[in-house]
Image (cartoon, rainbow, N blue to C red; front, side, top):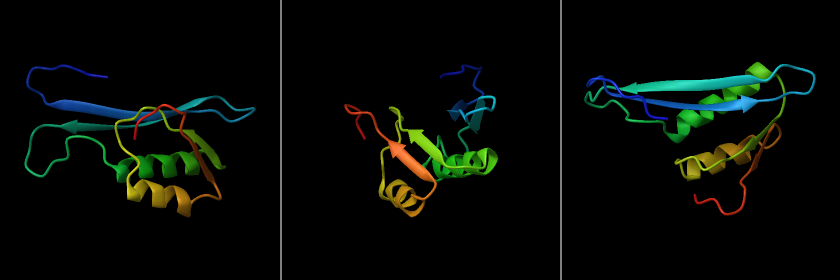
Length: 100
């Protein structure tokens, strides 16, 4: 999603819609604003996605089944290690035909 402003920079958002049987659905998200400053990240890295998934796990108090959509973040070594290290509460599905 793009949000335009008069030279105010760039706003990136990532999130997940969470469903748990018998509970209301939730939207858990993170926002990052980029103003063009030195050493300021332009968007989300794999650690930001990792932190979002961990936050969802804590809030939902249970295992997570994540459907990895066509997010621009490739499945880097860090992401793969995180998924493998947390296999007891994290299951990831990638629909066929999606690029990494």
